[in-house]
Amino acid sequence: MRRRDPFADPAPLIRRVYSYVAYRLGDGPEAEDVTSDVFERAIRYRHTYDETRGKPVPWLLGIARRCVSEELANRRPASNVDTPEQASDEDLAVESVRRLTLATGLARLDEHSRDLIALRYGADLTARQIAEIVGSKTNAVEVALHRALARLRDNLGDELVAAPSAAKQITPPRSAD
Figure 1 (cartoon, rainbow, N blue to C red):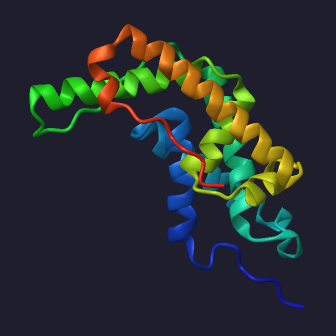
Figure 2 (figure 1 turned 45 degrees about the horizontal axis):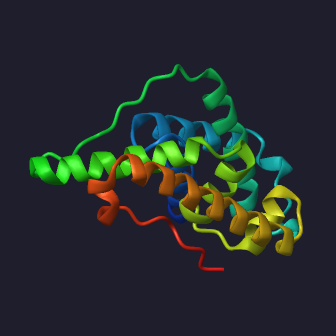
């Protein structure tokens, strides 16, 4: 029996993995490098992919989770935020406050909650797909996501008290599941 090549159509796989990585690390060269590492590992270990266990996305995101964890462990505490080239000062200020507020709110969550939110909103996975990746039941993932989002909203609420002028601009993610 001939095995199907998991990389037959790589473009959507690359987009999905990059979206997850960028959600966890921030958009830019660092996320691109980690995404490249994911696919380098996947190609090197493609013999471990078992199509009977599902599509390649959960397999790749499992690799991506390990690469992100390694990157975060090696990361120096510094943050560079890319800014749009033709934005007004007011737009830049609002966007900067929004990003910093969200980053601060996410940073207050535990690693598991940040990972679940990144899989849901960064990789755009359903609770069922996330459950397959993390080795849990769908209902447990839904509950954990609900609780993580509630904690994030609380964290964002605390941040909005500190920055009320930006309160109208910040909308925490709402669960679609």
